[in-house]
Length: 555
Image (cartoon, rainbow, N blue to C red; front, top):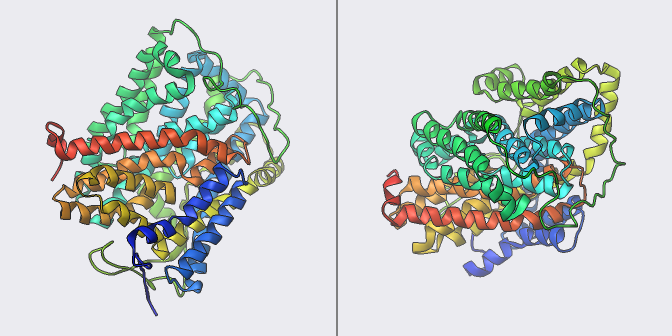
């Protein structure tokens, strides 16, 4: 028998919202204040979510268990699969000296750590976000920054801050495609509307990134380079999103930005070279507490820059190839295992006012491992390993060591997804969303914050758009606002929640080998995430009510 979600089980929107927030509060408190290890904190949040869903919101226990299991499986594949294989590649390049040679080649462009941060975290990370998304850019850039001498907290936090502006068009436009699907709004119009919001923040984010790392004075010293990186990203972002579509926005923008910054550095140098990789005005960001002994890095051999970049060029090619929709469909056609979860698939009904009419929630687990981005990363890693001189037996040994290295992180990711799927199927997230929808004239601000909350909860701008896209459209129409404006605000606001979602933080801690310090990372990035999200919300409010910003809005 189908079960309909209940959004106000206590007969009081305030009380119901407070109770719905318990799993999130448990997770954040365990991580940030009680310093509980991430996999245990996620397990506590999953337990709390199950209790709330079953005892307060009336979800059958069997459905709650299946929803959590569905999330756990989805966390392992594809997200955990990406993390495992990107750490495998990084381990291979570190142990044979290729990574040290890569560092030296980037130092040839500039020895200034601020410029290196722009090149790697902002430009290079945006390319991986556009090509693959779903944790790939943070895993790649976090690992590279550690190799450049950045402390674990700096590498983790800065990689997360940088991975914001490109998120809405990540994975070849997947969030926008999902948003168009759930709202019924025109895809190209949505792409254009988001492209009239985010470019302003694509200029702001690199300034914010360098300020977070080097302080205001350190940022001021290299403002021309920051401006080049930001503007050369923002202009293509606007042009491609408005005149082509959502698919190649990040790929083109990141390549243009990277090229412009590298060329600019040939004709401009900062007066003072910043060689310290520690966070500005922090003295406690270099403590490392790994579950594994520190990994030794081989010294750089006589390896040319071309060879040093070879593994990462191969990775780029394969990630981009695996991101092409036609290639993904081809691989899915070769082999895909789909499992319709009995007792859950089409048995949970999402009902008004979240949607216009009752809609059954799908629960079909697709094990399309061939087309997963992590598989492309694995293939690239194996090919790169062979070209770097590794034998197949040694590759297998290194892979096993990588599994041991990331085992706690994989457990955490699985548990986090279990929480996310449980809140989705039980309606806890919709209860939280409805609280934002009752803000009247302030809805442009709070609707944007709803997108931020959605990504913080689900770990994905795509998932947040699926979750709240329909609610944004319906509420906007009721308030006389443009549905394109508020649907886009969900995605644009969501990008700032990417840096605080639990999955991204675990990916960052894994890439930087700072296990057990997820709470430290969360505390560091939370302020940045909240303030940037509020700034996006204020900009959306200007677009809703104030001329000339209203002229940007598509109706």
